[in-house]
Image 1 (cartoon, rainbow, N blue to C red):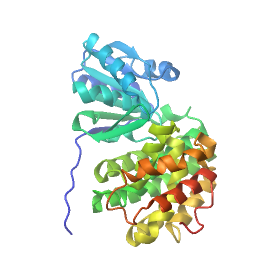
Image 2: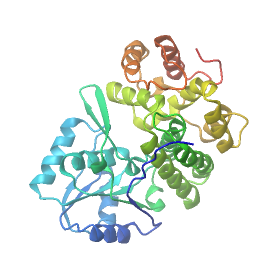
Image 3: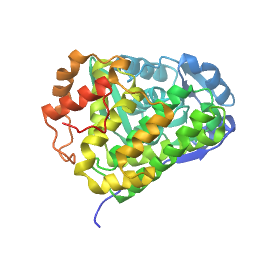
Length: 355
């Protein structure tokens, strides 16, 4: 057994019902005296409640999916103009992503308060979209110094969005099994993440107002993000970053749709990873376990339902091929990738033979 694993330095607070007090404590611990709060306009009231005891000098609500460079520049300029010394983000992956964009150029510390299961808060990965191209990178400056997980803040997240967001987290786990820098620690975290999410998401669907399922989903999202941050982006994430940046597909739904097709494509060439995933699902095979979960939560089924045009498949193939990890378990060709995208576009049964 030979590998190198870097553990990221971050304080993680699970505090159900105590977000406001915990955020105040974390801001004080980090010495924040002039705080910028980033939250979408739809989350303004929630963000105000969470940060009521924090010295806020700026509230910024220009949150856009996939973080366009122009939006990032405006947020950076606003932070500088108000002499901000700390950022609190309250929201999902796009909100956390904008906070990271500010931190990338300023080094400002972030206290992240997630309201979805995106997991961005636990990674040092940033992403920015310019034109039709999404660029991602890794930088220690963007890793939030603190995360405050409060499951009560996710109770208003609609069930359909909860499912898509949770499957996005599950995709982090699956990709972490064979991503470029994966190691046994990443795989252990990912396996536990799959197990927890497979239990938590059906509980959220069955009882949207219950805390038990939502706490499991948050816990699973954290595990998935820690694994992914270390293991790096595998084939699944490369596909979804292109689909999101170039074609404006909603992030969580794109992940939820594409995941079973990438799993079915890679699993035969990665038997040990396949066994781990199957065991985490408690299923005979990895794809069987995933499909059982997807059926239980009524997962998104086809890319065409979320704005992807069939005519764009060939263009997407060319763009994705340029970023496919060299050590993907199975060689990726233009024909095989075209078949995968077409299957995902039409919502074909991923248990059918892959091209």
